[in-house]
Image 1: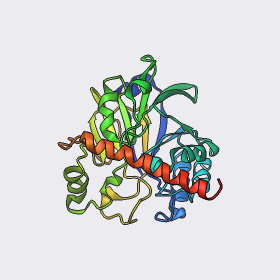
Image 2 (image 1 turned 90 degrees about the vertical axis):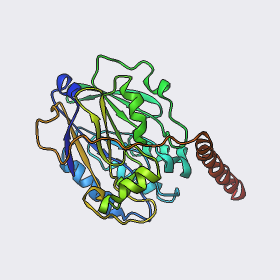
Image 3 (image 1 turned 30 degrees about the horizontal axis):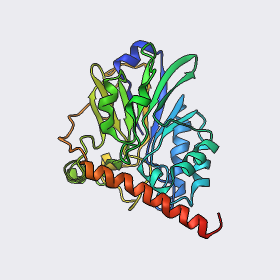
Amino acid sequence: MRRFAGSLDHSERLDHLRVAHLTDLHVGRVTPFNVQKMAVRLTNEARADVVVITGDFVCHSQLYLDQLTEVVASFDAPVVCVLGNHDYWAGAAEVRRALLRGGAEVLSNEHTVLKLRGQELQVVGLDDAYTGHASLESATRGLRSDLPTLGLSHIAEEAEALWSRGVPLVLSGHTHAGQVTLARLHELAIGRLAGHKYVHGLYGNRATDGAVYVGAGVGASVMPVRLGERGRRELTLFELGHAPGSFVEPFGEQAPGRGRKPSPRLQYLRAAKVIKKERHRALLRRKNGG
C-alpha cells in the first residue's frame, strides 16, 4: 500500500476525499484469487471514498468473469473504472457486463460526477488507447472547469492530452511496473524496449502542468513473478485535498523516459488483433449453437 497527496488543484477545491487506485487485476488462473480478496480487504480497511480501477480485469479468457463480478461487488465504496487491452482481447462487452453486475460504473470515453461525502468529484475515463479505442474529444466533451477532476486511462501516455484539457491528475496502469525491478530491469524492458515514457510511479508536476501515476497492478497476465520493491503488487491511496508535500510519500515525481510512439502499422495490428479475436469467439458461438 502506497499513499500520496493529490494535486495542488485538488487541495484548493476539496476538503478531503480518499481515492483507492487499483489496476491490472487480471482475475484468472495466473493470479491466485486470495490475492484479489486481499486487495479488496486492504482497500475496505483503508476506508476509501471511491475505488478506481484502470483496466485489464481479465487474463486471456472469459472463464473467470463470475469471480471478477464477485471482486468488484466486494468493495465497500463506489467503483469507477476503464477497460484495458486484455479486456478487449477477451471480449470487452462481456467484461463490461461483469463489471456492471458487480455495481461498477464503466467509463468509455466519457466523464461523470460523483457525490462523495457532500463533495463533487468529476472523473474522466478514456477507453483503452493500446487497442485504439481512446477518444480524447468524446471523453472531455462538456467537461466542467468548475469541478475538481480526476482522469483514468489504462495507458499513461494519454495523460499528457488530458492535462491540456484541465485534468491535473491521471491514474493508469498497463505496465505492471515491469514486475521485476531489480537492477532497473523494468526501465529497460518497459521503457527502452517497449517504448513507454511512464513505467511506474509518479511523473509530471502536481502543482503546475499535471501529473500521472502508473500503478504496479495487482495481478499478472503471464508469470506471477514480482521482484524488487517497486514491482510489488500495489494498492495506492490518493488523498485529494492534501497538497503535495503535506506528508511524507514513498517517492516523488520523477522524470519520464524518452518513450516511443507506436507506428501506424503497429496501431493497425493492435486493433486488428481485437477484431480477429472477436470473430473467433463469434465462430465458436455459432458452432456451439449460441
